[in-house]
Image (tube, rainbow, N blue to C red; front, side):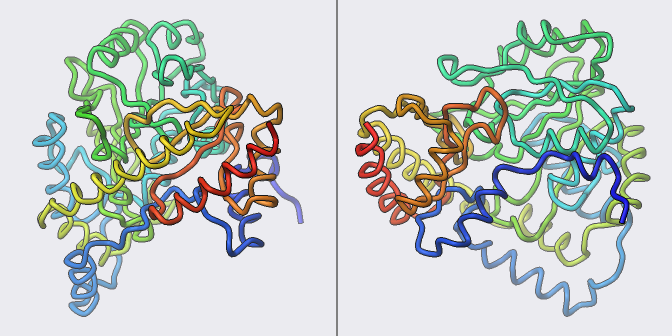
Length: 385
């Protein structure tokens, strides 16, 4: 059977590659999974079940049910200082499809999208599928992997149409400050670019940091597509509900595209998401505090291993330690840790060229899993020194 060039050449996910390998090691301590080990809060589950029993089993509007879109517009206005109505909101199948809709709506073949390096690898595959060109903007460990306005401006060419931001960041945990975002906004306005701001980890912040949405800054609301989801905040990864805020014409365009991607998000999940927004939010803070304890446990343990360096993640639930001192590539190190030590990690080069020499470790795992992984890593990496 003939396969399209885009399907044959779409880059594989290094994360999924490690998942597949890890299936052969069922007793491995898994720090590769980027999803909460918490269960979805019970009141959300119960509302979803109730919705199914009440008949929420049919198609919904392409853009999502009106009640959820209105609630999301209210949430964004109150929490993120992004004004709008339900006409500024599209609900899609997870942040992953939401991002694909954003990229497809912005890029024509050959257009360039600036992306952080390191970055979540799906950005690369999605730009490729849209026929665009992903242009990496390097970030550095000594700068806590913060994306800088100067680096962005240096990467702009006549083919550049948009910038993709991710704060808090997967895989580095970087959280951009307001003044940094203001500098980036100045560059965006000067070069008349659009922005996709990917913000699913907005509530997972540590050490007093505050999340700032780029669209809330002066003159940016009409330039920014703000992407978010319920997956990380409410431990709802399997429910697959994401959303995007943007100018009305952009949302209308993506709504037309949605019909060709998944038509609509399943009805009961949307009702459950209403319960997530309207229900008690103390569950979110409880999970955040749990992640912070696990972060501290993981980073302290990593720093106790001779040869390992690791900056303190500012947000999300990933550590990104530097393992270059052991003289092996990140991919070889990750494979050896799996095969010889029984620890699942993700090689840093899966996230871009700037990730070489690093590993991504998720602290969304349980404390017991983290402690087991650290013990095994310490024994194995010490043997390499």
